[in-house]
Length: 449
Image (cartoon, rainbow, N blue to C red; front, side, top):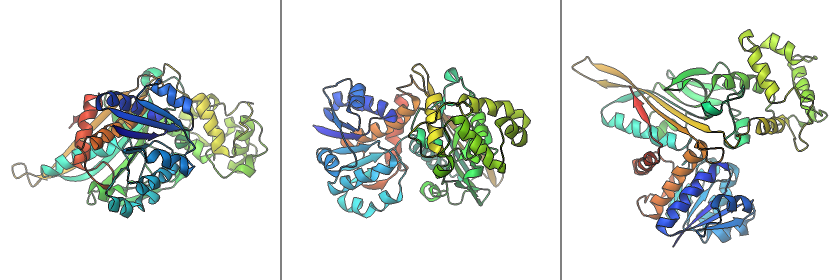
């Protein structure tokens, strides 16, 4: 009997757990699910005989090692900062590891040990990164195989609230890690546009976000992901004129978040400046004071700094989050980012009957030599994906993050995927079988010219 060890049973793990349990019935697997909250595991497994719920302190090596030694494959759904703890154990005991997170320097530094052990570390195997890599590489490989030369590559992805559940001025609800939402864009961004490397500081990432028209949905805005450039050699598109990976939001969100960032409401280092603030209104007043080193209320600020077309919109957004209310600040908050996260988790929470939505769009321009129509013919192609969640628990986010991991685990355990080393899912032997199974499960792309 094969044993799969899953670390983490949070929001994004729900559909993964469903998938592993359904496949366990067929393949005679044993599933160990370890989390700081054992009751959360039990709730998601419904006390299945195929699942073993374990309460764990992930920072304690003896707790991790005892479980890793029992596993045939390990999946980590822990926060990215904790993956390395699991990764070291997997190297030590020669266990394959799957994660949905970016390959960081700590994981990359294990590459020689991973190679020497002949094991597989498959990272970035979720949605974005994950499905974006696989679907993009499928298009890129097909275009190149047909003699095309890619000149522009733009890949957009976003986790949004579904239209039927969109009922707040931010046009957004939280369906995954709230801290990541609050700190989005904080590392700045770098990408390639018209042969030029563009670097953007945090303060301008959300400024004047460009718009796209998403099929059968309408206008969405995008902001650039932190590092597109590192993917140029991975996608083998070094010669492309434009290469950018982005995050999608409704336009109103980007307009409002630009002011959130520039007012310092996501600051992580301002404890001393706000420690005497007692209410949300006090906190916002302090932040507004810092704009011009004088007292200023939200009305004056919007009159001075916000385009008249969007004054009402921003005011409603701030009011909706409770930033003007005389509500006590959360006691545990140590900085503005903590305060904002608490407000967002409270006001932008998914309600039981709410549905989220995943949207992804690849825009590719390429050229081919064609003697019948002239020396070079230019082409444009788009590939789009839209997934709607079932409810606030089995979300589109949980589905699209979790299923690629589950499918990859199955492919490894049944011998279909036999790669070793450190990988992300850009190789055909990974993306082809995973995309085929995802399509069977309703996660499929539509291509248009």
